[in-house]
Image (cartoon, rainbow, N blue to C red; front, side, top):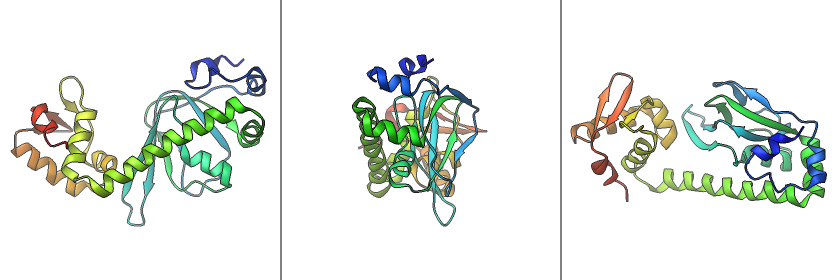
Length: 216
């Protein structure tokens, strides 16, 4: 059964021969918090997400982490694509941030389809180009955008309808490419300005307009 193909964004246009080649692969469920790969692991498959979210982190020599990108249905993992094409190991870590439904296409099947299926090749490289653009945007933000602006954007993006941001200071630091101590100081400054309140285990936005005004 390949009904998962019709539930995975971007795969509906696969030709019939490619669908038959994928017929023996069934979706798997990956629980929240599971580590899909770590630096040094061999790349053995190409993952296609049907549901959920996976975050991919890069860790520096000092132990500092940065969120490279998140994978949701329709996206691809640039680490996996590069590893399969260049025969390199993973250099980052991927963690299931929610329960995930995914299909893991074995390396041999992936390379075979890439060579003979135009529709599969189009899907892979379109998703790869989209993902590469998002990685470049991360690098641009870290290199050129002020921490206050990155933090404000992250808070606004993660807040629920009531303005509550359930992330820890460390999680926010990882998301914006900073360290916890710097984020904590910036949050204190935002609190003094009346933009947010710092609550036990959460951050609450009380002035969205003021916080939005920090964005260029």
